[in-house]
Length: 103
Image (cartoon, rainbow, N blue to C red; front, side, top):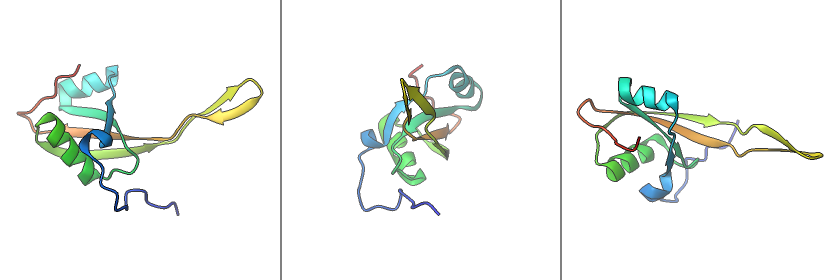
């Protein structure tokens, strides 16, 4: 079983947890229809950390946090094989009366 990276005594600041918003067509559709926003987040952050960071940074009320650990894809450079980095994705659902305007 893999070691859980979210169990650490290291306290991350909100701007260290939320790395960037995922601005895609699918993300825009979810934001319009379901009031859900997608972010790339720090791999060491747990759901509670992500919830607090979004509420502090954007001054909104978070209803639900779903996370996905995305595995890096294999890539080839000349004769060598490598891979892109693995990353963590968070889908944040907000209360009906709150919105985030970064699109």
